[in-house]
Image (cartoon, rainbow, N blue to C red):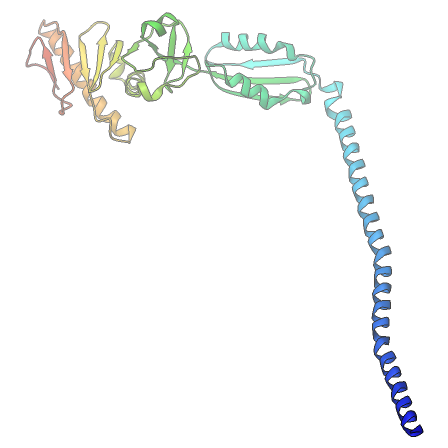
Length: 304
């Protein structure tokens, strides 16, 4: 029995030693983890400190650059604007007007003038087509503008009373000019700066072509009425002309070539009628054949 106790005691002792030996690796692992955590703490602190120093350095550098920028540019009196130059080749009067409106900028530092904002504000003026603004150090601000050139006035009584005109892009602006009148457009309310090219596209195509082509310059157009099927063109010293061409062709050059043939037919018809002593009241050029016209009074001497 004592041997059993010894054996049992030995067994208990061995089991105790075995359990202790099994628990030791856990203590070792926990100690290592604690050591690792203790080791990462200072390293993380160093990293955060470095990042803080870098951020502070960047902040101070930004402040320094701003200070340098102010002292060298925006707060430097050597760059005060004393010379304002406004150029408009098409209309010196418009340049003078813009000069007076922007003369309040004199004395302002050139680098404190918002160039893009000034350019956008001037471009909103209906009769100004393009505008560029440039600094010319040390004292000059240059504004170059191009004027919208009207090609027709809008003939609705409401618009005619306000002296509304349009340029070749269909942009509306007020101007008193002796220009051909466009009527028959379906725009109920028009304001300056609005673009209505779509509604009067065919009339603008005709007027722009007449302004640049030799055959078109032989015709003095008083008004252009927009009709669903054709344009009703009233000549100042001639008949009413019903004019049509293939407007479905996307190529404008193709349209202009046909338009040139029709206008040449018109000029020839009017000239031959004058030679024959006939006063034409109407010339119909809305047919499919651009070289043939029908006249009122009826006359067989028309066409090319």
